[in-house]
Amino acid sequence: MNSMITVAAMLALLGAGVIGGAFFAFSSFVMKALARVPSSAGIAAMQSINVVVINPAFIGAFIGTALLSLAVIMLVLLSRTHPATVWFLAGAVFYSAGTFLVTVFGNVPLNDHLAAVSATDPAAVKFWGKYVDRWTMWNHIRTAAAIFAAVLFGVGLMQTGGM
View 1 (cartoon, one colour):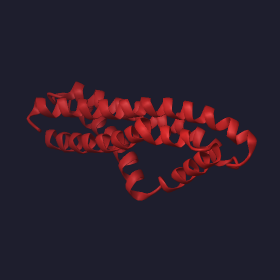
View 2 (tube, rainbow, N blue to C red):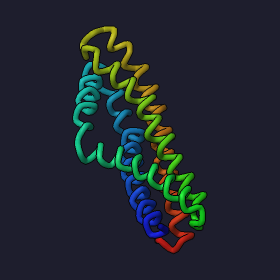
View 3 (tube, rainbow, N blue to C red):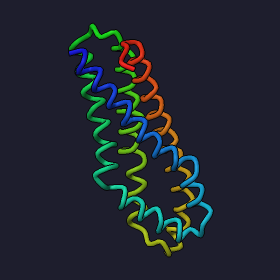
């Protein structure tokens, strides 16, 4: 059981790091760049990004890490003797709640609203500024949660000699 927990935690660490890195790119420069171009161009670009992000590589890493986090939770709760239980539970909860659920309930509804507008509609231009601010705020949260989850998984692995 302990080796299954270690493998799941290692994979969850990798997934959280990859997703955290992707989200970090948006928080640190992609959204800033999109906010600097004319609104219609920013809207059209973000609409395109929101379509192409639905691909096997990203969705596999994003949802796969959420599933791994749930597996880690189940495995450590069943074991209860694993030396890194607290670290692994914390990492799994941070990813599940702070990254996955924030995306589902924060970023995706904003993306759905953006998908329904025309990039050249004056009302869409007005919405764009609010969208960029709110979407980026939620993205900062999920970025930090994914990176922190990776750190927590890593600390747990170091405690068990898994790294």
